Image 1 (spheres, rainbow, N blue to C red):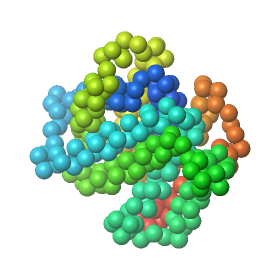
Image 2: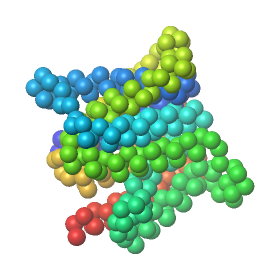
Image 3: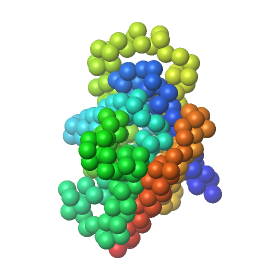
Image 4: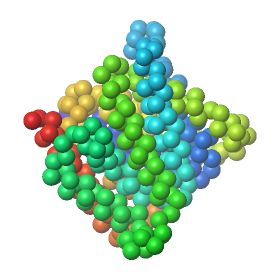
Length: 297
């Protein structure tokens, strides 16, 4: 029972990242915001890693270094730069529904790149999810989108989806040779190191002094709850009940994000958001069910 409660909290923590990210993005430039998030996360992850391995760090083997650098560049560097650029321009609720398509694109890219079989149910799920995302992105006016009506914010959030898909596909090989905690830790550290130079060029040290208390709370939330606690609890759930059942709780992320954005940021629950959200969540569920069945066969 405890593991299910932990996975629900994981979904709530990850849903809250969109609200916290929106607050931070309106004050801090993207590289600075991303660097501060992963400076916080890396320090916590290194401490957990140190304790887990009996007072020493579990250093990765040299052959894994290139893969870990790629994880840092995709899942930390590019994902978070796109994340903050997008949230600077669009609402947290809409951003969460675009990023909710992560599992759908991972299945799609697995079929295209690794030639995994794409089952009909997954195909229907992908179609529904993309249709829902289209409704959310265009605010219900998909004809307008064909005339160039999609904004930069939406495109940046799709950059997050592509970055996370790449991170997940690279991570498949890394996780066969490294524990989830160690892989997340070193991807975070290497991604933070890559973010440091452009953050300094943005004026990192001068920006730090201008951030408000809510922005600092957002950064701490993103680093501690959204990154460290979220990943630790999620991987614990995978260990306890398996990836198929644990992944179903990800469907709660956009739901929690939309509710928190309405309560905290006073974002409206529009018709296009609700219709698109239902289609996205239905599509993700069908895709996950198809993937689960494929694993059992």
